[in-house]
Image (tube, rainbow, N blue to C red; front, top):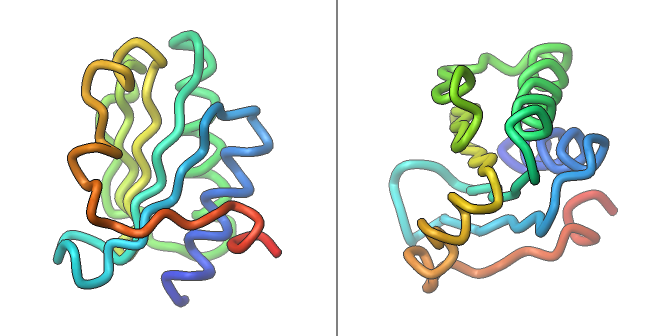
Length: 117
């Protein structure tokens, strides 16, 4: 499965659980970690967990090998490694603190309309 298809699955799943400020970064040529980062947040630990679980479940349903999920127990910053796509689901307070978008400021931002058509 292509990175673009995995990105589409992750973005749609996050949208289904009303993830806030959904951002996708094109990491090609910026980082060797992944081709895309998806960053979003929820406003409670329950919502963070629901968003992360939906992304994981939808990826598995599509046949994506979910490499690793970290942080689900605390549900403050959940990282989901889908291989070419790494998803960061934050609690709003933690997202404001870590500001990953600024850390990876040289990566082009993709509009969600471009991803999901």
